[in-house]
Image 1 (tube, rainbow, N blue to C red):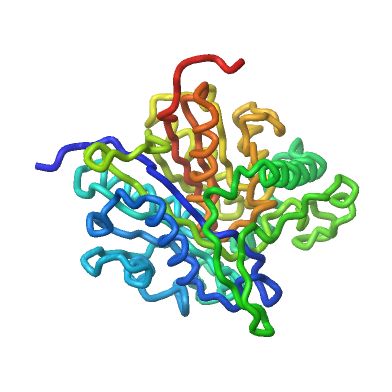
Image 2: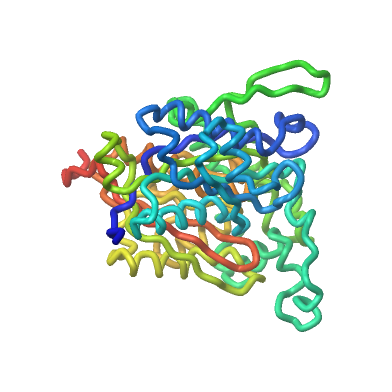
Length: 401
């Protein structure tokens, strides 16, 4: 009989994130090739792990068509040069795709079915805008199950502002501005670069280049700039381009292992998984999804929100994050939250983002042996939330000076 096992996030890498669209750096790059690059980079950095011992490859994408179709986990495994004995599959939970890849592979490892797995996601929003290949069932609207605007994420963000008037546009603007400033400071301090896999790119004229940094950042952003922005989702609204994640292309990949594999190959895990949870909410206000999923995950881990020393919360919109912080009584500018900025600055390639959150939390854990627990959480289209609670293997119980 297989035995239950602890689960570890051994390592994660990602491509730089590009602006979606014809002017973006990945316009002439295939989606599956982005996932291949992230996979190769991760395997090269973990050469002590024999490729033939990978039990499965889970890769998420929201729009599984064209260069993002064809059972991504399997096709990317082959393209990345993994042995043909390594299987793979594709997965979709919209924005929480990669997070779900990690959760499902972790569950397989925890039950002793797998020893090692690759889990990640890719989204080429330039080639595949959200919902572009979907045909929503007319019953959603005809039977009033889901409001027609529930598939417009910006409208769902405006509705959180409606429901919680204390979450003002000014608070969201300040959060968006600080995300840009924090991301720039993290770049200048070299925080992101070790986990980025450079990608060869070709421009419209056919000239080759190298993508080495996230393309969408606007580090000069001021409150004055943000106050002047239009509200595209409704007249006199509160959600702007400055408080939304830009449309983005990119891929992420992580290596997940059980306790036996960690021992067998002498691995040095970056995080230990304690719990994960997903939850559903009304699709019209999908942004509050991480609140119930976080409560569920904390309950499974036997912890309270006060135990969490570092937060990586996906900034699909500023309002998503501040609604969660407000619910748990955490200040908008709490230093534990998104220390290096988030998706407003770096971008949110839907199904890839969950593992970006984990990569950043893992890097912060290494710097903070005084912090024992961390949380990665995000909202999900169609009214869901996803949360994962992690333990820091570097924790030493000493207070920070």
